[in-house]
Image (cartoon, rainbow, N blue to C red; front, side, top):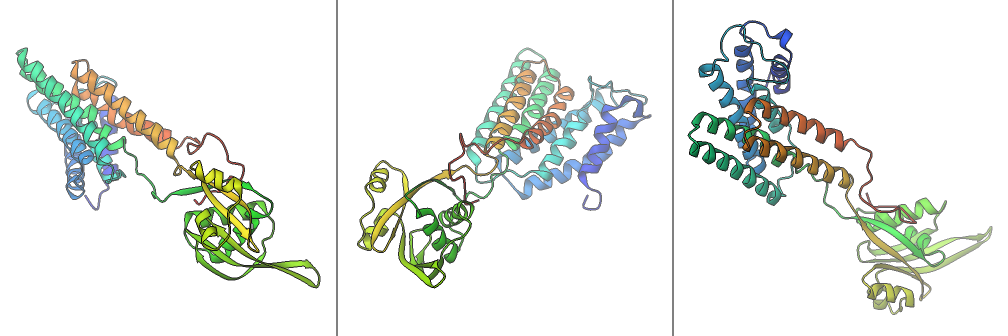
Length: 363
């Protein structure tokens, strides 16, 4: 399985299952032989990375394979010359391999277990309820089939409803600049110091976008996350150099250096805004308002999660009601995966309601 990629064998199973003209004599047994190693590889992946989403998907994979094997051996689908009509499948081998490939290619975030646990619990409850209802109605074969269909339809929900969350590091936006020269001065200090702090990157980026040139900096020190100080200098005339001792940081940083923030900065700070003050030559000159920005792709991930959960939930409900047999439910994993992939490629914004005046983020 390390030599023959699972997706290639899975594609062969899907094509054989979906294209009746290509279904040669005893094709279903060839499809089973191709499906088994793909499923085993997917189960090994789930075992190597044990989490709720992977467990639920592994159960769905086994349910699809077991149902198909039972139909082949005892349900009449193993006869030579079987033709599986497109749109009216008899076997669920394509579902088994698609779910297995999802296990092999998954990129879920293991740190977000609660939503996956809730989805798994709901799907499992629906499967048990459907099983009990059919058994109570005296239909053991229908009970197994319906329960398998619920698992197959609902399995991709937990796996796809939690697309991988990118680096959780906070992104910062310079939302507004109050006072002439404050962004340029703060940006010069942060550019000189460098580092990976989100505030420092955002301020330096915003200043670089807004101003063509920044003053030179000497004797810079401090922490980009808590406050900086240094001497800024530039030519005011061919033979005249103007220098200023600059402080930039939160209001308490200025107060610790004996400088009182401007009234506007103090008021904004008191109202809960994130304020970054700027002072030079011992006098506060203005302030920057900072805001947090959602991680890249926030809206796409949210929409993809909703699509995955909605599609799989509808499939599970239909299966529980007996309207969707296991073989038909097998189309859902592939369909949900394609929908999620399409949604995540949409050019949606990251979730900000408007562009900030400065517009620079820490990225």
